[in-house]
Length: 318
Ligand SMILES: [Zn+2]
Image (cartoon, rainbow, N blue to C red; front, side, top):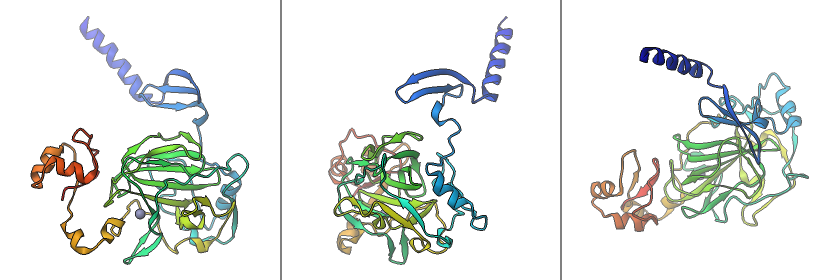
């Protein structure tokens, strides 16, 4: 009898594991009907088969030239959906893109902090975004409406990263977050909270690393946004090859070597020491390994002894 039960059980396990996308339940939600799959994942009915094209006019203009082979897909697990193949510095035409239009006319600065590091070369390395000052725990907001494409920890240097695709085809990156407050495929409006600012990934000191990308290629965010006045510079943006770095291939890595904290005098920098939180770390073993106390670490990082340590976070220990 028991043997028979086991074989029935095995039969069901086999069925469910080979049909991972089998719908086991449907739930009516405020966002429409949601499908629950046998593998415990879920999806909204409206997202089923979603191809990521939020601006069909722009998408057809970009993909019609077979010599350029531009690609943009919808992938929740990778930063760059063209597999790093798009080179926008080879763009032949100038394309007119609406930054603010009818239903998507709102803009909100991602954080209120000042610019601490600009786009471009710094100490021989290219900085693909702009750094904005914040305290760990400050809210980080979506600057335009769109759909969350990526929301997870990125071990290439971005730390906790949210990528939002907007209705004009641009994508914005929000990196080094201490907490993620959205999930992939979620619709967001301008000003919606995406997460809390932090210091995760390759970052020395809390700040927001913010990028604006078009079909994977980074451009200077200050082409679009006035970070001092916290407004869009214009309702329109002309996309042309001059906005993009020739031959630049997007990589998954972010090197924030010249972030604001390192810009302070060398004497102070030399005394500072950071520890990257690994699995199994506790405040007490980090403190004892670095000859310091839990209270000193808490004071240096503005955290409490009870704060949950997120893996990948950089803690200042000296
Ligand atoms: Zn940065």
